[in-house]
Image (cartoon, rainbow, N blue to C red; front, side, top):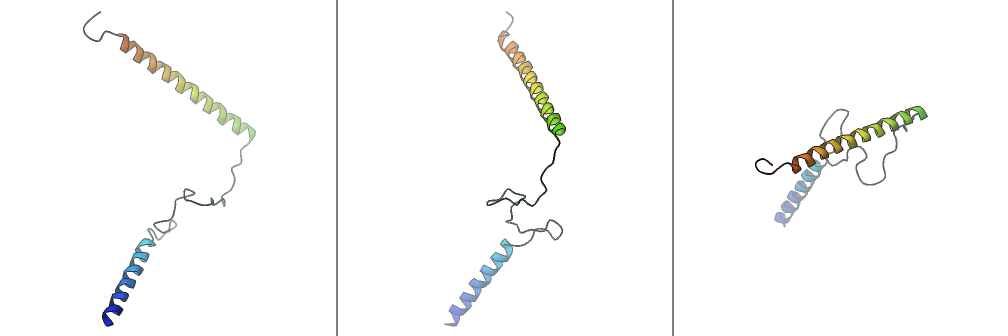
Length: 98
């Protein structure tokens, strides 16, 4: 009977230790959180919408939209340039001179 009590106490101590290790903190400062806590809103469940909504004027929206479209055009031009260079290289003779 005493053996069973000691075994039970040992098991409970191990379980408590595992819970403490699982829920232990990784920092003591402003970023204090349990190890298994998700970062930002990447975890499951409903998002935490406590932040302020982004407010942008119509001018800012148009400026950003134009910049993104220009960047996309630049990427397309660069892609076409590289494709042309590769095609030119492929058309060169494989061995020796033509």
